[in-house]
Length: 239
Image 1 (cartoon, rainbow, N blue to C red):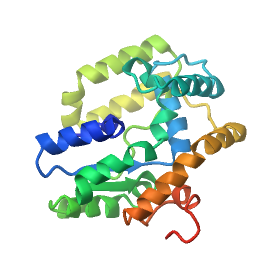
Image 2: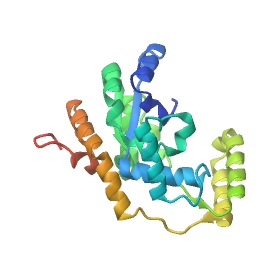
Image 3: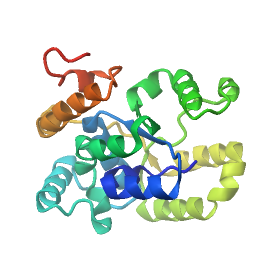
Image 4: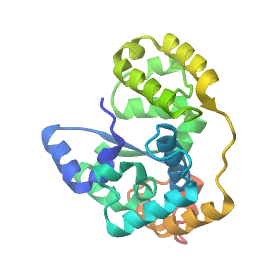
């Protein structure tokens, strides 16, 4: 298996290439409430020092909207500001579904967070692989975003983590222990909340995209959807 969220936004071009190069490939896409996704992405790129720590979410959204209007927010150099445009899921759904059919599967972050084992077992069944090991998995959060106090120390820690990725993959317990020590030294635990006015701004931006996505999911027979999808379903459309 290979995981790269950015593939989805490649749309038809990437879907056709994958279907051609990897016969019988199966593609799983995990969708999350785009409002929460945008907020989470902002906090993530800020925690990794890819945007200034002092940049407010309002300023961040201004920059995202500017790039989105210009049609340049998907460029590599603008990746930190992909928080807004990356949640327009309806933009790329149709080509993936048309090209891969039943080999294209949609799961929702909200369902995975609520019932991780059930979702993972279902995905294993779809992939035609053994479900039994799922009962012994550790369904814990391993990559929570934590803001930093000292930028240089954070950059050094991220560099060490990247260079040691293979080693840490084989030594999960050691990584968790070291991460706990590091967080005690350089984490900023001050609570951050998404301001209601900014939430409303995002809700308004995503409303037309979510309405179209709800229709596309219903047409594809995907009806077990979270509230952020069903709230935009047209009258008569399955919830």
